[in-house]
Image 1 (cartoon, rainbow, N blue to C red):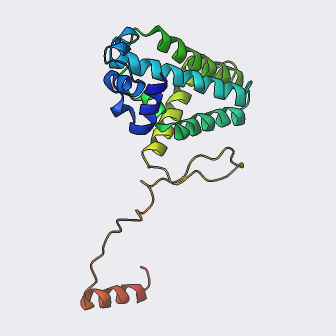
Image 2 (image 1 turned 120 degrees about the vertical axis):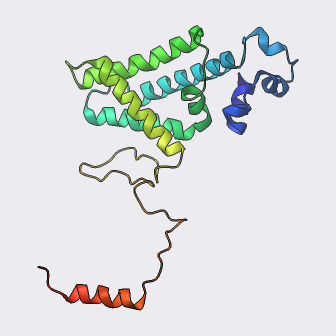
Image 3 (image 1 turned 90 degrees about the vertical axis):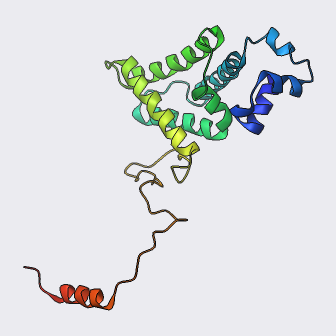
Length: 201
């Protein structure tokens, strides 16, 4: 597992294979197959470890959140985890997995239960399953917007009430590729100045 995590951090999930793990660990190419049936099983094991780390991180930082502000802090902590471990988060969320992996099923169930518990404590009486799915989808969406460079800055740990949302690069003028505007002809300039001087109807 250590060799797999090292490869993941160096080359991303694309470089993660049983053969590469064997080379990194200094064992025969058949040795990893004693533990993993194939690449998807290996990725599932790595993802399960990532989910366990995420649950531990959230439980230690936010042991009993029960207010909307604390729920928001949990969401920010999830996104920051993704930014601090980008390759691991992609393996957790964007890689094909082994559907028969009990380890991964248990790990994802743990994070789902944590989110469901937080949502239920924050909004008693709501459909905790539906709302926790919404929260989890929002967290994943924000995380990948940051990872893919669509948001300008990482989420702040806390935001004062009434603070504006972070700007996105999709909604602000691009900095590297400005649109070149063709210069106006003299006739167009005269017409534009004349229209500016005319009073509105």
